[in-house]
Length: 347
Image (cartoon, rainbow, N blue to C red; front, side, top):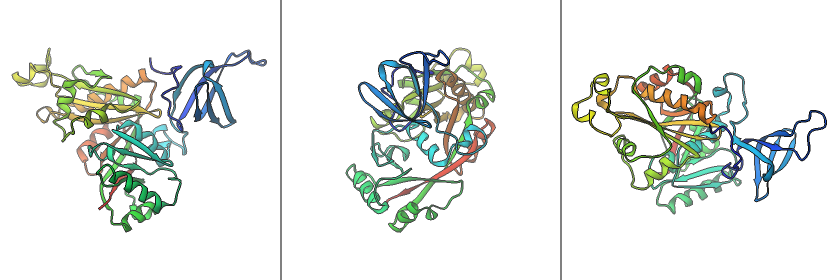
């Protein structure tokens, strides 16, 4: 079970955490020897960490930490937990779920570069303040990407169907000649709802390792960049790779061709990146010859069920707004539209 760990070295500064630690002496009122600090991790050194809680700043000696983990941002509105998070906070929790070869920050903004492999891996998440005037911040972003031979690209978020020109940053980028493209929906759901919608199917293999057969199948889904693709797929705080591979008694069940039944390359794959108290589903693919058999739904539900071992209960995914087939699948599994974003790319 990976619910909590005493190792706090991988907890990102700025994330919301719960830290359980031993008190110097039992609480005189209750006799308790342990207590929890819940809030934002604001500092950490070789001896202590500091958590900004609702009651103020708490400093904890690392030697007293019993367990700690990231937890989702505090809800900002009523409703189901997967819909109660703000648009900005959802952008924050989505950021570690998809990898990058290189990451940097500009104030609160997150910059990612991956040799051009995927838009998410080569774009800015402009959430919060960049720590300087917007125009200066955009100049700095453009310089950062130019140094890597890439155009600047911003993932600008808003409600479903929002107009980027109504956002101050969006208006500035449009005035600079940026183009709008790849409008994407953010879908969210509860882990147990997805797991309960499993249509059933063949055995699903889930591993934390990026295996050659999984990667071979993934390369059929899109153009890849040697080295960068592997780095992006591995670069999340915790990653799960799921696959369905032909063999055993699956030939008759799936109607496999004789050549496929003997193979080791998966006929369906999916990836889940876990970070910031959420899990992000991506890289879902089924061999065209075996679509319509519920394999994508089965893989997704199996990954959701596995999240119980990870102590993670909320799931997000991104899907292009006009991909009606995928949206219909995810809605059947219990996903709801939370928000959206559009890429604004330097011309």
